[in-house]
Amino acid sequence: MSSEISIFGFDSAWTDNPKQPGSISALVYEDKNWVFYTPRLTRFDDALEFISNHPAQKQIIALDQPTIVNNAAGIRPVERVAGSIVNKLGGGVQPANQSRADMFGASAPIWRFIQALQVIQNPFAAISENKGRFLIEVFPALALPSLVPSIWLRGRAAKYNPGQSAKFQLADWQMVCNGLIEFATHCALTPVIDYLKSERVKSNPTKSDQDRLDSVICSLIGFYWLKHGLAESCVIGDELNGFMLTPALPGIKSILQRAATEKLVSFNEPGVFGRTVPVTTTKSVYSDNVPTPVKITKPTINANSKQPSRSGDIQSGLTNDAVYKMLIGAAKAKRILTYGDVLEPFGIKANSFSVVGRLVPILNQLAQRNLQQDEPLLVSLVVAKTTGIAGDGFFQHLGSGPFTYVDKKRLLGLEQAKVFNFDWSSIKV
Image (cartoon, rainbow, N blue to C red; front, side, top):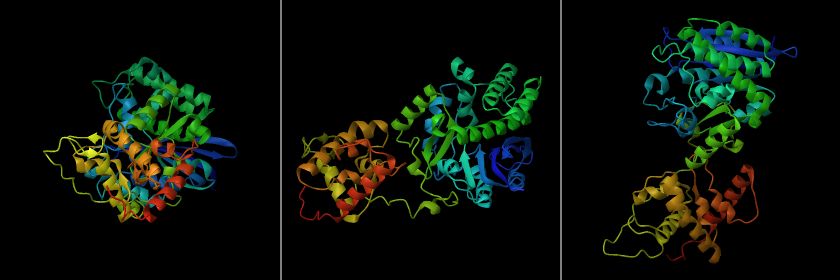
């Protein structure tokens, strides 16, 4: 018999090592009550079977593993933002990239798992839709300081993993259990409380106990999101570069939001999750929807020239005229540029400092130049890589506001169309 809602918490352990399985638990809403299925150790195939054995009109899988990994190396933008909290507490964030073949390579078990589930990776649709199967990435280490506020108040992560025997502290294990009991009590999840009480009294918990506990944390994150949405949680990132869903105390939310702004990462923006059909997680899935950056050769800089043609960065050649010429080239080619695409030809790496301190002033001056010359705004072609949306400065040039994300997307598209249809051949730089 199908239930109304099933919420699964799956700590996958990232690989499919039979000696190191993950754990899955579930909260199932049926007959106006939440039924708790206690966690069990499981591998990917077992998790698929468990999910299929608990059908529901709406299924939400809260997975403790990166679910969108399109970067070949390095760290995903969402992980940099999560680090603003996790690192602050003395913890660490594992980077997810495709070079870690057993976890995120082409044949990694996570992709087969996602493909078999045929899920929708849209946390906002997981709330708004009445039926469907939704996958959301969660991170217990990021969520715990909000689920268990005493962790945040003391300013130190909980050492509750028995697998790290040198660091493990039984008092921290008990603190986590006690905090989750208070949280589950607040949510009126009595069966979860009973399970947590049995875990709290263990004098020698094992790594498997911690894996099971983490799957319960994942379930609670999914439950809280469904119950309170953005009022008590936040969504970091997007469907192209990866995202995380986490509950967040006000102070934690403020830090995450500031970090997201600095690192040009989407924060609580439903519009960056446009898909409402199941997707896989390879680059090819998104290739038809991602604007192709225009290829621009590095400008020639006259070593004897002491002044650029207009104000700008003399040493690098990043000047108003150079960027203006670049944007006209992009307009003629009907291409969209990221901040990095604009800065790279000048030998400048895109980061929060270079974008805000060096590029944004130029873009603002070029917008004024366009307005004075009765031209469409070329700066509409420059967008953040993570969102595909221009910065706030662009929208300020449009006049009245504030604008919702949907408004921004619509207005940006209209301005870009004007830029592409404008005759730039007669413009001299």
